[in-house]
Image (cartoon, rainbow, N blue to C red):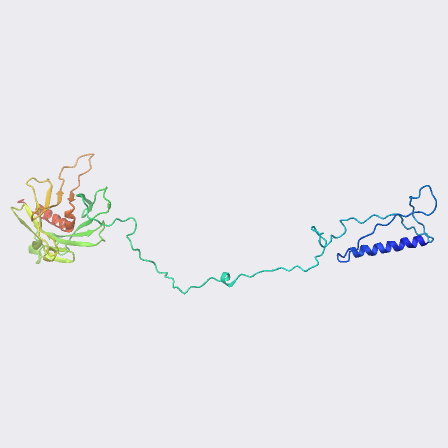
Length: 324
């Protein structure tokens, strides 16, 4: 009986230690239980058998197995704590809010200019107008029954038309024609000027033939006149333009029609300004018609407007008369 009570107390003590081991702070090292030795004589003193108490309850005897190490919580200083262990200290989650400089953009006191900026250079795709250093041959090309354009050569830096030339009738004097010269390839460009002339204009129009150039109108006889047997025609610039360096120049017509007509300054060194080639050859099948050409020298580009005006006027007058 005493042996059974001793075993029961030992079991109770072991259960208490197991409960304490679940708390990592109150863990008590477990002592191994000694094997039960039967006091009765037998063949072997080391054999064990279960004890049977007087009340008939069988109590297990002998050494009990030690609980598995995986079921016991690891000590606090273990490098691999058990996933079932509750941390002894509370976990604190920290969050640092962004600073004010990062949360809001910095505001500047400088005024931002949102207006479009004016470019300080020429836009791309356009060449700055320069005086050619070699003679340039232009062509008169018809656009319709009453207008034509003066075209530069295909190899020129700028192949746009130089002048647009149109002829219209004076509604009050149908046999009087007005020729208008405009820069560019359309009638909507900058107006260089115009002139009016025709048969019987002197008797039908009191002021007679006129030339309107660069916003000023003149009598045609004040700017153009002929001498030397009607083979030489002179352009005399207005007084205000002569003060700016413009000089007189003249067209010298050859005796044979169809030849090139030169235009030169009237005073030495008689610099060549331009050459007009009417190209009066008959058209032939399979060959393009030859267009009238105007070759202008570098010195002649200074007089480009006057050269075109005088050429159109003189050619009109020459074909009206029968004594040339």
